[in-house]
Amino acid sequence: MSRIGKQPIAIPAGVTITVDDHEVLIKGPKGELKQFIMSGINVQVESNNLLITRDTDERIHRSKHGLLRSLLNNMIIGVTKGFEKKLELNGVGYRVQLAGASLKLNLGFSHDVIYHIPEGIQIKVVQNIISVSGISKQLVGQVASEIRSLKKPEPYKGKGIQFVGERILRKSGKSGKE
Image 1 (cartoon, helix red, strand yellow):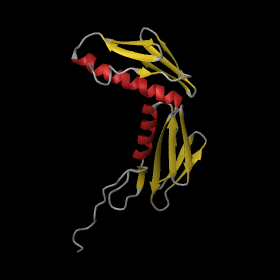
Image 2 (cartoon, rainbow, N blue to C red; image 1 turned 120 degrees about the vertical axis):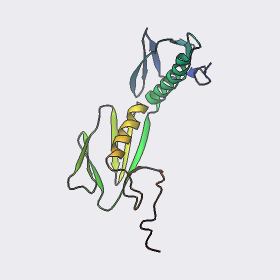
Image 3 (cartoon, rainbow, N blue to C red; image 1 turned 90 degrees about the horizontal axis):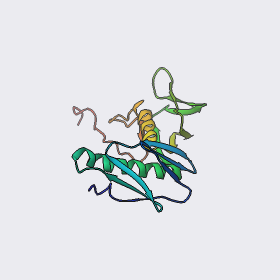
Image 4 (spheres, rainbow, N blue to C red; image 1 turned 45 degrees about the vertical axis):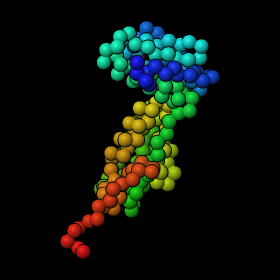
């Protein structure tokens, strides 16, 4: 058995789980999320626990077993607490503004970069810190990664967009100068 997949998931108060033939619907105080059930995997709700089992011991079913358990656990955490990632802008003249349903970023280019915020994501801007939050862990991480990819931090001066707490390996510059 998968060490992760065989662990039951405790269902907190205020969360309702509906299991259909091919889909799991999780509703909580922050919203609702859906996940399809992969073939060969079974999901059951038993006395405030969510149990995930598999039909056979084949390699493909073993890998899906742990994956589905992790996805469902992240969904339960998302509808109760939510997820958040923070990014920071480093660089002279680098600015960010929230303009309706999009972000307007000044990143040292000759033009402003506009990033449209997808549905289900909330973004807050405080000075040069961008806070991306939502109930879907995958979507929060994807949006944060897309914003970071607009101007990745460069290794010489560290200018760009980086995650809060991320360590950038710095290079010394020209080696001819000693």
